[in-house]
Image (cartoon, rainbow, N blue to C red; front, side, top):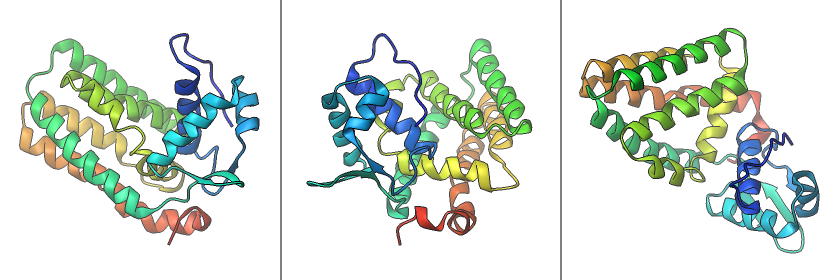
Length: 225
């Protein structure tokens, strides 16, 4: 498991949740992997209680399954969960881009443009982890500009299934379109074209459906059903 430093403001539970979530999405904790509270606690430098609380929280979104007397494991990817996450994300993100069209300040536009340029940099250098990080940051910035940062945070546990598919796509799909998608979405927002921006966002979020067959062929053991 890849472990980064704990933020001074993070509780033990929040830190454990963030680390588990990030490692599940990046597939460092692969679908079907067994999870030991004690081993996780030792690796994170925590007691078992915050780790247990984080695992319980992850079960609510279906990312982790708990088996009494046997332990926990990372859930296989269920496309029903992916579809639900897509439904929620599509509704919220389309509403966000529509609401901010034509309203970007120069500073906001420059920050988003810088993000897109960094995405191109990491795409060219085949750095899928950093590309995914910048991808997430781009979408989070849109919610912040729309003054809906807490909505973005609340979506976190529900989106793990969707995000695992995104993570796999960056490693498997040869013709990656997400950077050009983001550039086009940004231009539509800048130019005040809400209908165009919404269509572009819908197309962007639907790419996981195009990738499904490739992903199942590459990772057959990662999927349920």
